[in-house]
Length: 135
Image (cartoon, rainbow, N blue to C red):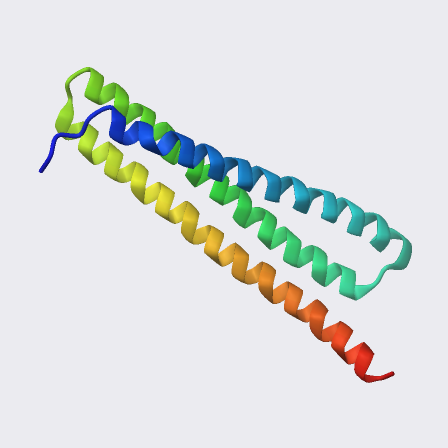
C-alpha cells in the first residue's frame, strides 16, 4: 500500500466544502418554504399543506444528517492530516478510511433526499395534469 500523504486528505477539503455549501443552501430553502407553508396553513388549515410540511420535515432532517456526516468527514480528514504530521501513519490510514465512510453516508443520504424531493414534485405535476384534464 502506498504511503498516505498530507495532500490526500487535503484534496477532499474543497469537495467537502462545496458539498456543505450545497447542503446549507438546501437547508435554508426548506426552512423558507416551511415558514411560508406554516403561515398559509394558519390561514387555510388545509390537509394538503400538512402533507407538504411533513414531507419537508423529513427532507429537512435528512439534510441535517447529510450536514452532520459531511462535517464529521471533514473533521476526520483534519485528524488524519494531524496524525500524518505527528508520524502516526497506520492510525491515519484508518481514520482517513472512516472519513471516507462518513462522506459516503452523507452522499447516500443526499440520494435518498433527492428521491423524496422528486417524488414530491411528481405529486404536484400529477395534480396539475389532473386539473388540466378536468377542463
